[in-house]
Length: 315
Image (cartoon, rainbow, N blue to C red; front, side, top):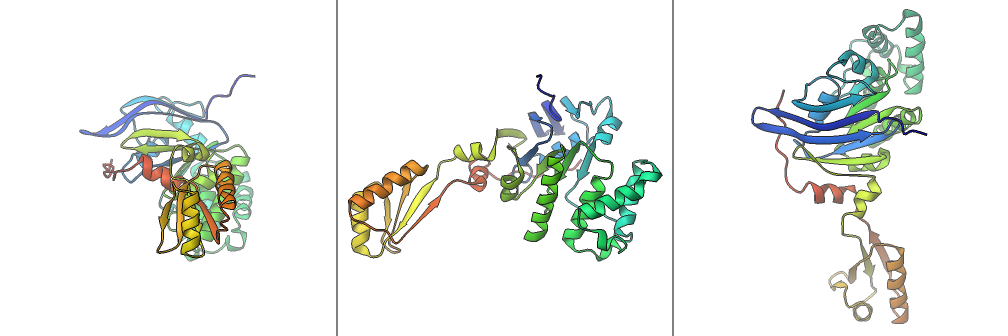
C-alpha cells in the first residue's frame, strides 16, 4: 500500500530580511494525523516559518505543500485547508462566545443552515456551552484560549498551526488545551506546534524539530532526541560518613559529596542500575535513598541550542 503524502512538506526553504537570513534551507515533512513540535530559542525562525506556511509571508525560495496544495499558486486552497492559532488571542471581547464563532463562520462563508449547529458543537466540545451567551471579555484566560481554538476549528481544517498557544495559561488550563489537541489529532488533524514549554512538546509531539539560527539542528521523537544527550546519572544517599566511604570504595568512579553524604555516577539504563546495586550489596552497603536523572527535552534544548538567538526581524 503506497505511503500517503505528508500533510506538510517543506524543501530548501529560505527567507531573509535584507542581509539577515532568518530561514536557511529548511527541509521538513509532517505526516497526516501527527503532531510536530518546533522548538528553538527566541529568534530561531519559528514564527517566520509558521507565517510562511500559513500564507502570511512569501519565502525567498523553496518548495511548500500544505495538504497537497501549493501556497504560491493556490493560496486560497491552502487557507481553506488550515487553521491558525497565534500567540495572541483573536477573540472579540465585546461579542459573546457564540457570536465569535458565528462571526468566524461568516468569514469562512459557511452555509447559514449549519452555522448555529457548528457553533453549538464547538462550544460543547470545549466546555463553553454554559458561557455561550456571555461576552468573551468576561472569560478567564483559559476560557478565552479554548474559544480561540474553537474559532480556528469552525471551518474544520485538515492542518492546524499552533504558535505558542498556551503562553500565559495556568497549569490546569494548559492541560485542558493539551486534551483538546489530542482529541483533534485523534480525528486525523495534523498539528504543527511551536512552544517554549518543553513539557508541552514531550506530552503532545509525535516528533520534535529543533530550529536554531534558521536551520534545523535535530529531528526525531522525544525519546530519540533525549537519547542523544549525555547526562543520565544516579544519586545515592548514604546514612553516614562510614557508609559513604564504603560505597565509594565499591564504586570508585563515583563522585562523592561528603557535605551531603551522596555519591553520583553515570547510569544510562536498568542494566547499569542493577549492576550498581549488586556491587553495593556485595560490599554490604545499604543506601538510604536513590534517585535517578535521565535527560529530558530541557537538556536537549540546552545542548542543541547552546547560544542566545537574535531577534527575528519584523516583516
